Length: 399
Image (tube, rainbow, N blue to C red; front, side):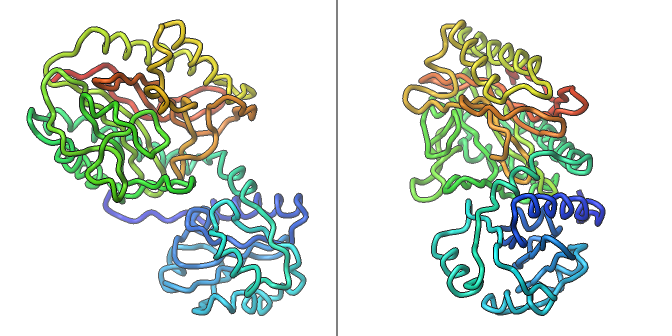
């Protein structure tokens, strides 16, 4: 990756038109988009800005900083500069939108005090309504353009996995391996930030743990935690433990290239592992393959989780499935896109259904006191068929 890629105008137009259909369906007069992920999706820029999309008429991008970059990055035609947030409504009125009584807002991510500021100071004559479900729903189905970008990210991640045999050595610390592995991803275009919509789930890059570190839980809502390098900031993933022979080295990383998030995991070992790790790993692959065979348009998301739990129970490994003890998580996969925790989510009670264009990761894993094994890959459902985007050896890789 040696150049910047900008979202084509035709992509933005389709997204805006779909958004306007939802605005009219829900009886809103328009929406204000502030959060950088939604802002990028609907405008093509992540600069400090507000995007107003009306029920009727052209969208308006109001930029605080950097106006110059926003003009270059976004294909929105009406772009104005405004340094004062308090004058956002003035700019909307100047553009000819005067009867704006019901405005959709990103209430799933806007902090309460920020919301109150907008509600009482900026849009005090309008009613702010939650439009977060609209944005999530529109971003759920990926275009061919988005899938191609995701494919590029997946290739960068799998190329990173291919570099591990040349990086891993006995006695190195987990955090040292993490730095070398992350450098491989950075060279391939990873900007170094994985976006999460869930509150307080932010992290960078991913997770490398070895042996017993794989059983250390963390704040992160995933099956494997890791001690990290400090309890103060992002206490998760690679720590100071030295990597030994004959223990699983678990590498679960994202790779965000051009905004789109690949997610995959592989297991490496210096030497060999006890047979029970190989058995658990094979069971993970069996679960993955069974879940893939189930996926087609119309299948409920929860069906995958229920089947995975059923199979783990049949393998007599349910207590180790997707975590250890009370730290087990209750899902077996999640959507990927501009954020790591998009829809769909494969968990009990989620009765929404698969459709073409959904991109997601499946991650059946088993955790034991002395290590974690399993598999994770990124997929897309297209034309009723599941395509795996992270193509790399799925067996435990001996070095």
